[in-house]
Length: 122
Length: 109
Image: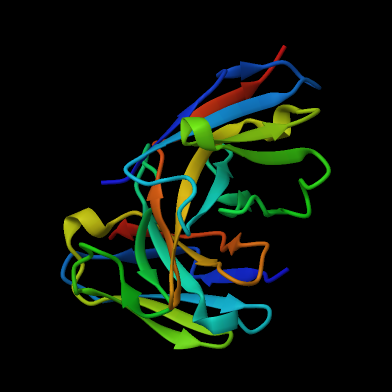
């Protein structure tokens, strides 16, 4: 049973950095799967932030690309999100998720963390 | 970037009825990498359908997906009380950025 758990500050000051970590259990961060971040502003829909591959390749949402960094820590079996220069518009529930890949392709985002609310406020 | 448009925005039905949700893409979705998720208040999204028509592990067979190219459909054959939630489509896989539709709220009539 794969489990993902987000952690990080729940309150971030405007123009500061947002940093979150997703701890993975039940799967290796070095497996064939990709690891993603998705966010959801209060009362709104889902927004894809970006992803990282087993080899460390990244893809980011073009609207956030200049401010986002996703990285992996293999020694701790976890991956991280850093978002710089945050504003109130970055207030959201942040989810980490696994994109399951097999030899015949991707099977979608099959495992999700429970989400963590990050509020940007002074 | 592929834009996904879901319709209707809100669907009001009664338990036992059939629900049909639509997702239209601004360009063809590569490899039919189209997924559907269910989200209930305070919960993370749950994968229902991947590859446009394959049910994820543990998903009841009243949920089915169809379509290809730019037009996709999620059908719930007979609504159960626990099916009332928000549903999102997503294109993923080999054509980043992955994108989500804006969601369809399925509410009890």
